[in-house]
Length: 112
Length: 112
DNA sequence: AATATTCATCGTATATTTGCGATATAAAAT
DNA sequence: ATTTTATATCGCAAATATACGATGAATATT
Image 1 (cartoon, rainbow over the protein chains, first blue to last red):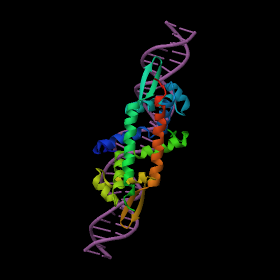
Image 2: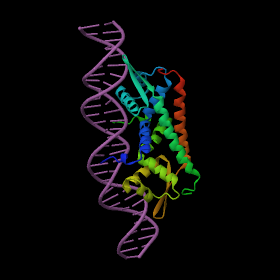
Image 3: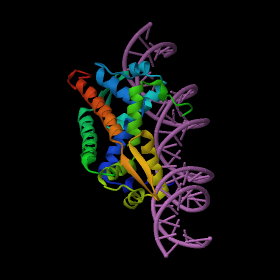
Image 4: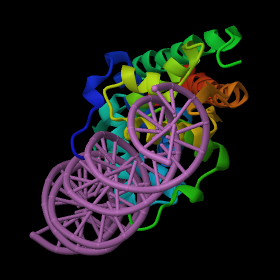
């Protein structure tokens, strides 16, 4: 791809794009759902639900962790993943604000 | 990646992931903003605003078109891109519903 | 008719993502 | 102490994404 031009954009656009990328794979959406719904959210149980190998799930979990959407604490042998609600809310606010800002234009006679 | 496992997931998760992928690049976010705000939304003007070559912008426009987020009509020499509001609303509703459904779990004692 | 303009598409290079098996690590169970 | 269990990480292969120049197609201008 030669050199990435992503950094040439506005920081809020970059941030939004990064979050969107985090949920741009059905596996990560499914993982977020599972982690949010479970009382105890252990990686192994997620693996059972998903049609993916354990190493692949672990990798998706890592990506979600890197964007800050989930926290993972190692609790003895098992690890416990949880939604980071502060990050989740920050990020969903950014998305909603993008959606709302775009929809504001709807009533203008753009391209009518 | 060997073979994509995406189709092994639920259709609403796939749909959401596809939209997220569509806005997972700052260039496409910037394009959506421009197209929404402009009265006349011609590709050339978008190219002037973005730090990308014309062919690259055209490619991003194509991707947005493929997910259905924008419509493009060829109008003589120039082409006119517009937000497909029906698709945009369907998609933003899906996102908001995902966010809200996830946040519902916030008060449960998941992982305390 | 020749040229210029606008945009799409093709080909190509490189980067990133996805997926998995194999292996590593570390605690728990035997 | 050895084995089992749960998870992370490494290394590889294949797929996709990103970016651009070159070229093509189609209309507008001269």
